[in-house]
Image (cartoon, rainbow, N blue to C red; front, side, top):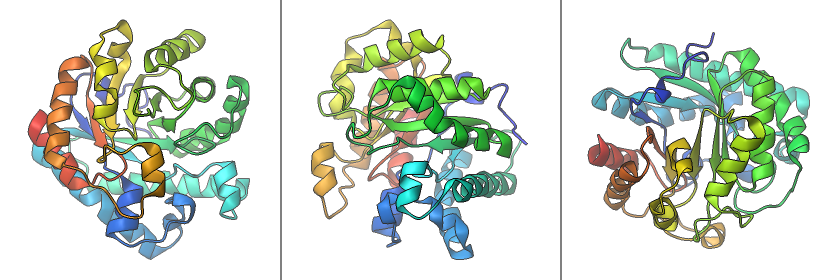
Length: 312
């Protein structure tokens, strides 16, 4: 059963953590094979579920240490029809694994339940195409129809909310927000940005947020930025604008490299955790409603610990 669907606690101003980069951690630190960078197949066997549980443990410990909440993300960023087909999953199999993801995190939440430690169960939606480029352009209507089945599974499985991560163009964001609204599910929309602080489509971040809000009646609970280093978007945020108040989450990359450089890199660039933490502290001064603090590619529990140290 959902615990926070009617009232998301991260909207009250209390800090919340997310995990770091699950894919890069599993691939480079745990030597787990991830075809097409998909994490959800790990749910299908006991060893994989144990690996996922170990991954979440240090982040839960940080949340307990700093007395903050945590958003638990399902490992379903690739669990949509296009990526699922590449891995041999049809619609029935995808629905099953998305339900399994919610059940897995629900069990994890119950094991770590504390009265003063809210744990939000979040169904993660990934882009239809690549997370770094506009590969599969859709209209908002097409995107809504495409992502609606996964959102419905999360709703019916008891997730508190859904989040769409690493979106590259605004039409997909609008479609996901519309599908979530139709399913009566709270949704967070997260864009990725290039080194110029713009979406891979070329659209400025502010206009993408404003357009999404205008078309959907400001339905998203909040917006986030993920899979980009703060160095790439600090100047955009420094301009100051009303849309900055809609950003509640940052999940930055560890590396200052561009998406193109990361795509061809054979080694993991973990960057400087303490510098990243200091940059998050600066971002908290630029973003009046920033409450969700986490990481993306290249980050692990060391980066989230440094962010906690600098910000909390």
